[in-house]
Length: 419
Ligand code: DGY
Image 1 (tube, helix red, strand yellow):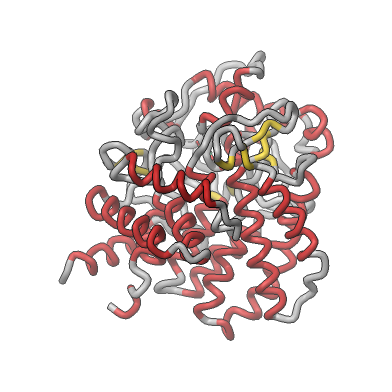
Image 2 (cartoon, rainbow, N blue to C red):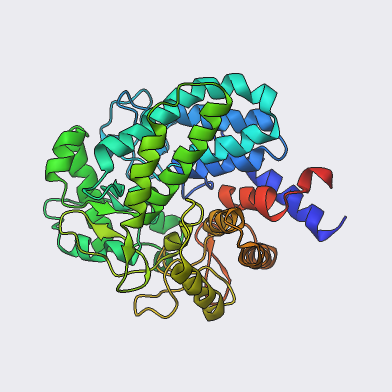
């Protein structure tokens, strides 16, 4: 048996072992529930060997959808005391216990990829999912657009890039007064040097407490939440997802009215995140209009959203040149770079996959291949880790990680089913 086959088998086993009966946990221990974007990426991985399980993953994700269209960032299907903050802190009233915030929308994009593998079987499932996905996308547009049509997050966790330096200034301007005593669980699963600091974590919890005290009323949050950042991850991924939804809806003969207009607005929103001062897409504070002044791996999602930018492509070449383990989540040359700390420098395989797919779609085949090869090397050398030290390549965060396994199956080794 060759090494490639071994990796395929290990990756499949990770998905199977992280399956909790219809949904997949990102990793046992650290993340014991269904996480939104992790789950969509898991579906892409499952589709390489079990298409009906892939659809089930997306269906269980949408079983947690709220009446207003929001799909939560975590769905607490079964209680697990090893995770904090759990349902008793979030105080939410959706159909299943959940958090009160969302995460970047990749479900439509992954649904399209799964659909392409077996169209006939998928059509009835997709027809049911379509209005749910559309309601979620419209929820973003209604509640999270800033005055330039970029899409905002209301909590660092909503970006999926929890601890990115982009959020530092906004968090510093916030108080965590009254947050009270609490016990973190994340730092008992992994080394604290890889996780957010107490200063940041206090503010994360304060924002959860504020949302809960406002009953997650979006109008009130719009008026009162001190943290509102237009985010490249969410904006680019929603733009891509909305295009994928339009393609699916058109092919299935569903009502797609208005989607093209939304796409035009989202495109403007995405372009508004260009920060000429740093020559990169950047996050922007919706309250003050100030850019964060940070390039990140999310800046390179522009191609995934179908947006071309020659300067960003030059920055990609720099990112490749500055480390053997691209793409660092925060530039290796920045004073805030930390090769191991959560979203402040490490490399994520699933981000590389989305960047790589975008590059290939836009015709940048050489860069896409280079990124795929670098990601394959990381996984071969250091395993299926949550993320990787972008200086040494070493595994970091949780182990036996669902999305890294899915990336291996669906992107690194797309011929897997022919082995
Ligand atoms: C966590 O539990 O720290 C997660 O990153 C929140 O999404």
